[in-house]
Image (cartoon, rainbow, N blue to C red; front, side, top):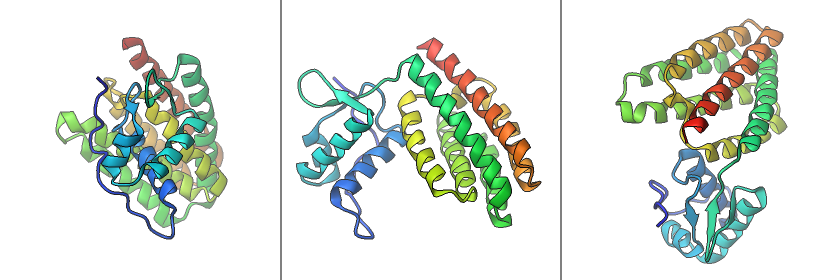
Length: 231
């Protein structure tokens, strides 16, 4: 029996004229990012509709969009299943992530404002403080703050197309399962890498910021491959 997703309940909240199908789609993407849905989980139209308290029509539309993007695939019998990426897809994903994160860091060094750089420091301080939280929650909170850190760099880059592409990439990363912050020593090394990236952005050194960001993603890939070897 498939694991029932945790913390993915509640009603859909729409704002700014967002269509219901779009709101359901966003809710499902957020559930993927939060780890509420994981590779191998089954998504059934009627169950999602009941959980989100909407009709099945917008759920059908949202699931169709997830399938079109390759996040889910038909399962035996009824419903869809969250995909599990193979090793070649993981390598391709991180190759693209390295390019995009490097570009974002470079552009942030060129365009980021002082308040945006201060915000990066604040996020990183929260990342450090997360190490003092309960062990069961530490990696999860660090993963959330890490996403916030990279999203803040993308916003500071002042490029809407890069920002949109980066958000989609994060949805794919959500399919990979456990965060790399569960790898021994990764939180500490990641913190050092983040600090160096912030310093390069604050120093308006685009070349260095890009180089450091790309190295940061390569190290994340190394840790990801460690996790995959254990599966």
